[in-house]
Length: 214
Ligand code: AP5
Image (cartoon, rainbow, N blue to C red; front, side, top):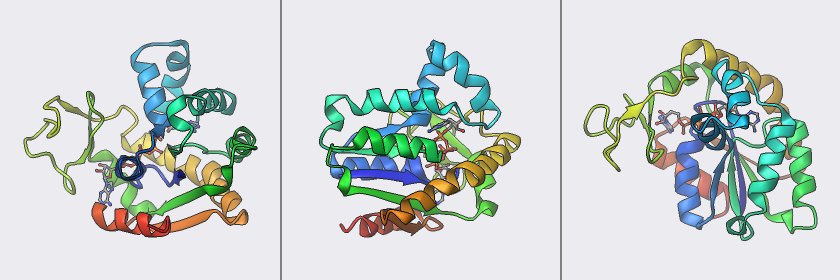
């Protein structure tokens, strides 16, 4: 099972990706998570990516393609994977095709989560994430049982540095300008599944499963 989850910022990619990867026992590969870890560890990649991410822009294609090529070469990705946040440009999509070429890439499914722009700022500015285990909450829709504390591991919940309104507007702009053409790229290849992401998390998960034929 090879799945790509696409959608605007805050559309629920990370939330759904965790459940889908658990269901299929495939690794959840999030380029946002990989970059945030690099930022935390102050690696060369992290130092380059940090200001770009904070401003809501996209990290250069060549860096992202190198990261994905390396990650998909790891053994746990040979039987399948779920990509969350990649590809984000048509150049990335074309390079991914080249990476997967000759690698039985025909079972690739691309699921786009459709959520109106009007809901995005609320979803993102009220998001809180666990810095330890990565669990994601929303202060209104999916609140933790105890304020500011992760239900799963008890670590403190934090807001991401790029989750302010100004950066979200830029991220949405980048999505429409650079990632929406990726959706059309996969539509033209007959790989696209469109899922209405404007519903409760469990309902969206059922829709994603149905779109994947499960
Ligand atoms: P990334 O981490 O990929 O961010 P994003 O695409 O902007 O998406 P988010 O993580 O913000 O949202 P999501 O769709 O995962 O939603 P979530 O499930 O958390 O990338 C960050 C940055 O890294 C980019 O801006 C860029 O700079 C860089 N980058 C990453 N990949 C790159 C690439 N390939 N190329 C170049 N640069 C790259 O949900 C959001 C909130 O809504 C949560 O609070 C959640 O609880 C809530 N929620 C989820 N589902 C529902 C629902 N059904 N109903 C109600 N609330 C819901």
